[in-house]
Length: 212
Image (cartoon, rainbow, N blue to C red; front, side):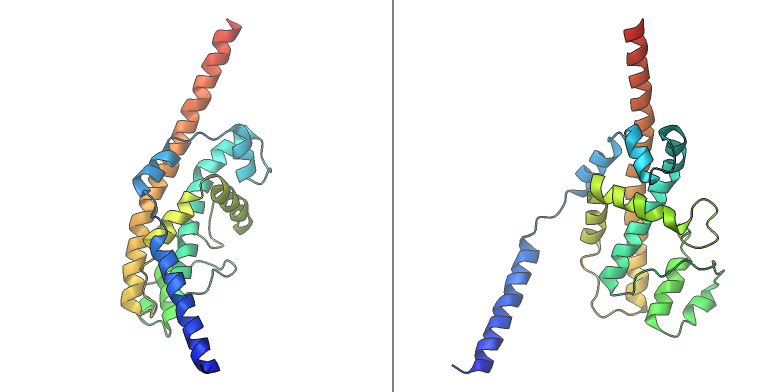
């Protein structure tokens, strides 16, 4: 048997094995994962960790209500860019006010994606963000990846059918998908924050009863 034939057979077997692994990977039960997130309770230490230990838990809890929400949206765009083969986010820039004709005038598919993403109402990852600096997000994302890995996994699962050859129609379709998925995850994250407040209230009541 020739060397070229052996190489072809090896590559074919490798590709078939990878395809089988992808097909055999069990899909997440998204509703169950969202329910798990929504009913979770963050500790005081969790709040401090999300802010990279720059604030004590009381002040940190006021910040993380917004930071966890924006961080999960950012995780979604990171995964969407990867699924579409788009470059990762670069350093933050000033926000552009883009009209539809500006978006349609994009010279490349990459720039078209950039302009579409930037025009999303939920996108605020720029120097005009009035709540957070760019440096605030890596610690928050690291926390969510460690504590709630299902967030990133849900995005990956929902984007798994992204086209390998990307055109403007594919970008629009996937951004629409992203918007739908991100709102569902954000609901769970916000419920988790509300549940955390209830947890803290119950703990305080328990302490008062012990003191009484």
